[in-house]
Image (tube, rainbow over all chains, first blue to last red; front, side):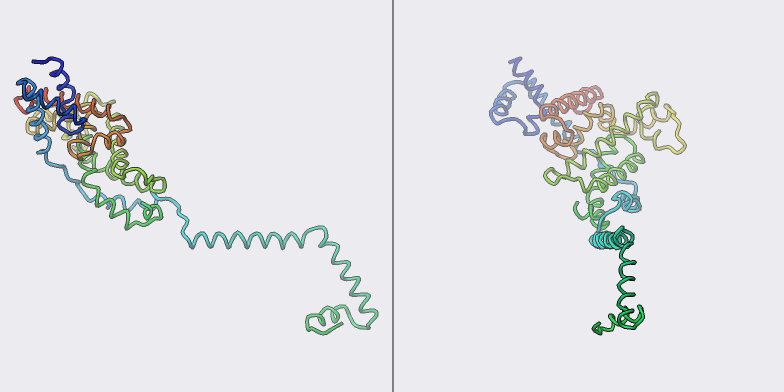
Length: 146
Length: 176
């Protein structure tokens, strides 16, 4: 009996039976088992245990798992950016920017001064042509040349 | 997983129905209670769905799935440690209204598989390694990936676990 080999087999019997050893080591241990009754018994015992575990009946779920998971699926996933949602968000952002620029142009410093300037120009034109300010402004929208 | 990440409930259902039985079996053998395993299995799949966007396709799905299941099962077992005076027997944990009655557990344990009882007495990590190898037939490398340990550590866990099982069962006249 080779005690070193016996000890080695005890340490590696599971890996041997699971085919996880390198070829050379596996071959050496198999050779030793062939010449050692004690180690042959160890291997036999290990194989019986493997068989007993394999014979264990698999426990089955009490109920289909999806029944409970499905109810909570949306919450588990959380907010998600669908294509439609992304497009809507992009459009809303663009509209917000345009609106912001427009409001800015109305309320900015240069805009305040324009009202008086345009009024002065209209009054001057009206005085020279004999027409009212409204008539001058509105005629421009009709496409008539001044 | 990509479809699940986009909110496809149909894809999630397919995944759950494909994996619910092995996950339940694994968790039940880890925690020793069918009701608790049912709850934990649901939690496993909810976490899978919640993590779908972060799923790394380079890894193996089975390893990732059983890593989640193993972590949840071990967390549950750790919580149970505060009730260490309660025998680790599913009949007690499944009974409505709770309460430990060791006499009932002693009577019923005699009826149960000696192998299963011996499995339940293993430390959680040894038990997990045994379940993944013997019932899920994972390679040592895959178990290492699942448990985030080295292959050598897997072999060590299995060696110690199986040695303990053999010793316990040979003491009862069974395999070993």
